[in-house]
Length: 354
Image (cartoon, rainbow, N blue to C red; front, top):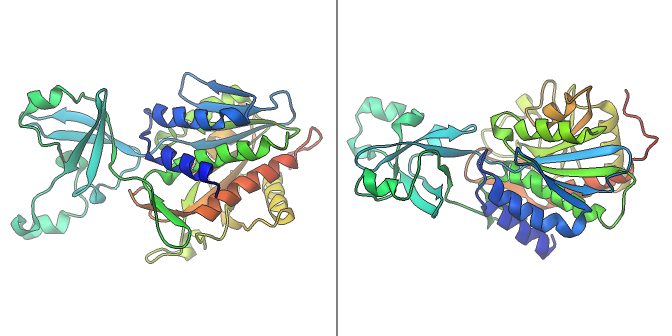
């Protein structure tokens, strides 16, 4: 991967962007794509849109959501301990013992989620320790009381895991928030690749918001763009690690290429064109069966207005919705190449009617 692209990826995933608080990531995203697009738009919902060849046909939309799961300050007790709620799908079992950043107007504040030491637990407490109620957990910032906390922290402040981007072995990388700042990255890289090719299609690359709480940004941005065809870019479950079950969700491996979804949420002509583009450009790919709704921005895109020809390209991800999500750099690069190749196959005569 080019050094500029890799540095952009690091900066993007290290920026805080819980659903509804995505602007730090959006600012980074817009700055990166500016040299590659004809126009940048940002809407009232918080979506960022990079546009190439706006008068072209057909109208093509890519959507990678930049929001991540997180927490939110709900209550501060008299002793200065902070209680919180979840933003998105949080596994409460992994919260105790973690470090977090509370994002305040004055900057990030470090806190830890404490719990009773195992030595002091009764037998019944040990049995239930793996799935605590979120309202029973607290953040400790080292404050001496409520008044000290309230000087710097406000109700509603967002919270993220205090971890970031690091390299593992064999081209693998780890971070919080690859679901789905990785998708926003792939959309940006696709715009970079297409800037050198001048496609016939009008390309609208969207870094969408609030997917983790209901695909909200994709709904509003797709309505505004009114695309003929739209492809969501997201992560999917890798099954190449212990305790996964390919019989349940299929065989998906890190480093084996982007994953093309097939099912009722996916327009069959879009699927065929993605596969054709992969083969023509010798890009490794995998196929994922999606017999129902995919639970991604593809759902919202497909059902926009009178209907949109939707597709979904995913990157395999281990340990989704944890602070240690693992993906392969090669899958990111190949996903961008695939989307660029798909775009260049489009022209004003193409039909997506099955």
